[in-house]
Amino acid sequence: MLTSLKLAQTGGQCELTREQIALRRAALFETIIDSMTEHVLVVDRTGAVIFGNKSQRKHLDGAPAPRTREEWEEAYAIHTADGSRKLEFSEWPLNRALRGDFIESIELRARFPGQSDNFFLLSSRPLIDETTGQIEGAIFVSRDITAMRRTEEELRHSQKLETIGQLTGGIAHDFNNVLAAVLNSSEVLARAVVGDEKLERAAATIEKAALRGAELTRHLLAFARHQTLSPKPIDLASFLTDALMLIRPAIGAMIEIDVEVQHGLHAFADPVQLTTALLNLCVNARDAMSGVGELTIRICETEGLVEICVADTGCGMSPEVRERAVEPFFTTKEVGKGSGLGLSMVYGFAQQSGGNLRIESKPGAGARITLALPKAAAPAPVAISAAPPTLPVSPMRVLIVDDDAMVREALKLHLSSAGFQTTTAADGPEAIALIEAGLEFDLLFTDMVMPRGMTGLALAEKLRERRPEIRVIVSTGYVEDDLPEAGPNWLLLRKPYSSNELFGAIRRLILTGS
Image (tube, rainbow, N blue to C red; front, side, top):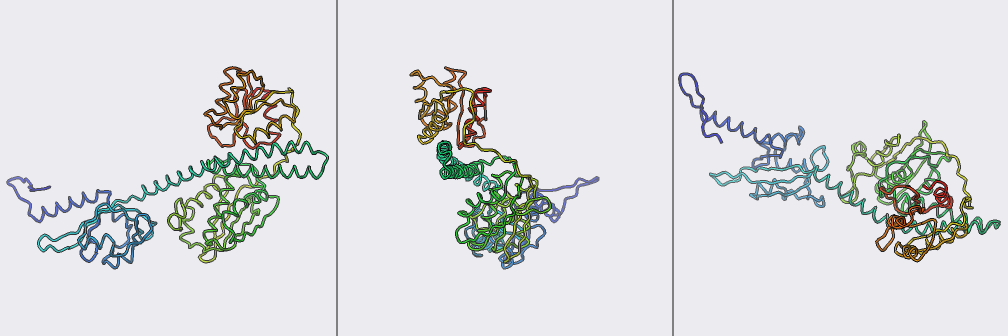
């Protein structure tokens, strides 16, 4: 604090006047207050702003300061921190402070003109005249914690997705075991009924259904794990047929779906991320229609791009909302009913894939969102044979290790019918016991995740201590990022697998040893 200010001059000494000292003190005080990152605001007894520091003025961004309490109420909306309740005007810190309340570090959510919701940590004090004891105004000091709250929301969202991913992974792993058993059994059945046209069609239908289920399961797993893009040609008519199996239960029975597809079109994109993008668009449309209305999905070709258009009969968007629709975390939904990431994820996917996203909408007239992607040529057809490839070594002794009895028996039946000698074990310790009892085998076919504290890789490593030359196939239904696809004398086989994939892996190990 300045207690005295004196100016030395030649020939004598001149004291500054009290007024000059006060002015300099005021200038110093304002400089200090303006250097603060916190917002400092002072109002008089009527609510008129008589001082705001630099941070406060910057936040208002040129908007005129309110001159009365009524103008405050008209200009701003104040909510509880969680956004669940709008504060009555009498509850505002402004009125509480002018009534004499002292407020310490209360968190509030405020909406300012032209801005989205902001979060503040605020303290306030009444300004009391020392002579009269009357309240002459109030001072408010607040800190903008919006960025911190947004980061926390993003973290919570990531944790939620991680939890969903873990649940999805466990369910999909069990479902993959079921599909693996169905595929193995259907392929054995296909070989057994050759010549009976009716049974051949039945076996082919079973296999086709299992393969479709396997593809949907892969979509769920990859969605949960946020895989990097793996683009390939996608038959959009077939893709939409599969995607509708996810879309219909997600949007509810009260929404009618109309599909218009130009057949023969292929897009070059990641099928998993495309499924996620389309599902996001349809769920957004459902919310815009409050669960009741008409949803149209149209696929066509325009100017060298293929377009997937999702149109709804919902509430539509204002120009302001449409302009910000793809901004991360921007949402018009109620608190807790949307992350604000749906359209931003679709937009990012479109850009990364070499396409674009267009939004057309008016209030009360629904919305039409078009995802455009690069066009691809139709891939060459892949020949599928029900018979296993010819193997150079037979009979081959295979030790099958899987904790799922259904998978073990189906795989045993499949391999045995192809001429292999098979032995089964339910887990790693049981397999080791068989080896110690004198079992000889040429190939270990093991599940990755098993009980009793031993994974498939751990079992393979332990057996290789005895026999380094052993060939190993590790099968898994999970989407592990850190699991290599192959190594010396071993391969990774993703569940569920086809007959060609199974026997192809065995042949590769025999011919190349890797």
